[in-house]
Image (tube, rainbow, N blue to C red; front, side):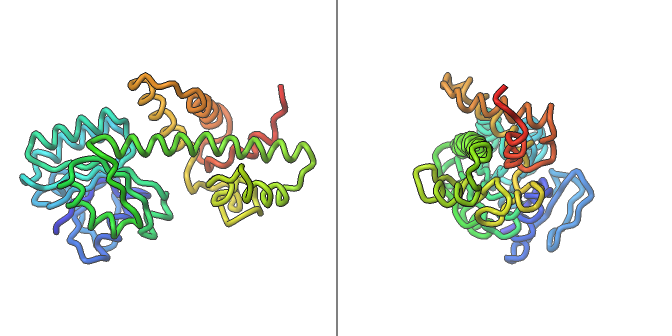
Length: 290
């Protein structure tokens, strides 16, 4: 199987390298001048897509995805699959899938969870939307790049699952950080707080696996000066996608909107730019009720 891979940044680069390491012939393209072990670089996105059985894209947003799709889909052979692993708006995912299908191609939207560490370690989770045939063609590649792939439904379902998941993640992280800041002001030891909550009804992934308090729980970005595992900027992007989808679907998501507003304030008007999304804890530590 020949693979084209477009978008070789912090996520796409390691993913492409894992496919090459597994023995696949991978041709890549990125706007930046990058070199990835085992990947042959092409001069354009269309060149990377030509003669490929599967073309994977990992791109920053829906507008760029639509532009890249205009370049690569005409260059692809009938029956090939376009697998988009970007996190983009649901409408863009559906539009690009329809464009691919009209050209006689298979289309899968398959955003990922697991961050840069998961991309490097091949432990990502893929949330896939598209036809059964498209998912079947992509599944062997998901097994190399990740540890789990869930076929969520028709085109757009993968993006829908991702933004619903990350809306929960953003809201939960804020609640976890608020609770630690409150515990501090109440004089409660952080380790005791963790020991109680991590085994009680306040249990959550943000508490137990990604604790925002340094020195408490498993190693997390909090123990590395809040250098990003998952950047606050990316959380803001995903929360905004969730609210865009909520508006499109006429869904009432007040907590999602509040989380979006808080991360926007943190990233755009405070010191959250370039910090991990768990750096909300030192933000709340410094704030009082008023």
